[in-house]
Amino acid sequence: MSRYGLNTRHAAVAALIAGAVAAGTVVAVDTAAFAAPAAATAETPVADDYGSTGQGAEEPVDGEVRASLYSAASTKITRSSVIARAKSWVGIGLRYGGGGRHGGYRTDCSGFVSMAWDLDSSLLTDTFGPRGVTEQISKGELKAGDALLDDGSGPNGHIVLFEKWVDSSRTKYWGFDFTPSGVHHRVYDYPYYDGYGPFVPVRNKNVVDDVTTPPAPAPGMTDLVAVNINGDAVDDVVGVEASTGKLWLYKGTSAGTIATGSTRVEIGSGGWNGMSNLAGGDFTGDGKDDLVATEESSGKLYLYPGTGSGVGARKEIGSGGWNGMKDLVGGDFTGDGKADIVGVEKSTGQLWLYKGNGAGSIGGGGTRVLIGSGGWNGMHDLVGMDINNDGKADIVGAETSTGKLFLYKSNGTGLNARTEIGSGGWNGMNDLTGGDFTSNANDDLVGVEKATGKLYLYPGTGTGLGARKEIGTGGW
Image (cartoon, rainbow, N blue to C red; front, side, top):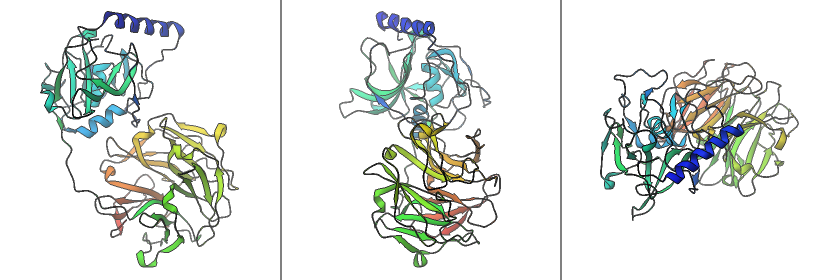
């Protein structure tokens, strides 16, 4: 809480925490490595959730070795990365406490901002300036990733990460802070709530503006999915043409190429731009891959059975609520020979497995299985593919905050700890899909480069991915 904060609020917060401890509801903080970020949820402030009740000791982040201790990160960090990192702590249940840690960072107000700024140490409100990390700026200079700082020590200091102004009056702003009631993303009065302060605008010296790039070409195709339509042991690419809503099949060859525009086959005459989350797999057990898709207007999930040359009449396999899911992927995640569906629940960021029965249906409701406890809203373009050819589909996805590509291997009942298989730049790709396009038993990855509209194949190596190859010259 700031130096001139309200003592009644301070006492109420302390009583609230003491009561939670007595009731056994305060849980230990997760000390695992920095995980996939979670999406932020806007909220309205409630009583007794302002300021801080203290801060822990200043110390380096676990495992960090950089040029100089207590300095900003040795490499620059963009404003969008700062905001993405801040969002990763919102809504995942972290408890305030200077003795707690998450991803190596202290779980209090200054530890939270140290994490968002990717510092090598969890600094304190009264050490950001003396350590040379921040410099004071004017109100008019505030940009995303800057902060409002009360540099008092312990419970007398507090810091709020700035995101953007609410309107041109610049009397309120969107931001983030960590208080005894949790990590918040909300609207604040400038510079902070009445009765707290003094707060001044500051800037991390290593935060830089994002590079402005020309807009990417409009997508020609969307919702790409890998399916073996014709049963020839080589996966094909199916996708929706954005301008017409038609569904097209691009047949694959064992050489790792697909049909060109002139030889593609129309397998859906229109209306497919009203569908989303296309996923593929043999859900009916007849040896032909099928499609599943969500009807956005109704939230229903439909199965389109494969015919060997296209898809047949659809069948409803999910009665509603599927527009609350995203990044659906198909594959045999349990190793029982039956195709399943995995998807992210938008409201929670949790990853769920819906087991297939091999007869065209999947388990839902109370039978679904939680295989990712949170943070999956911070991933994009999830893919189901069997990286190591063990008969179980794995999950591959890009992390929005870093642009890195990660592999989550399936163990038959859930997912193992992730491994990095792409060091960066994957935010420049979309519509990722995975399958065996080269007939070598190792699944490959296919995706669209947003800046050029080109389609690339990343061949599977059995443990990761090889050098990419262009298989679509543009218009994707």
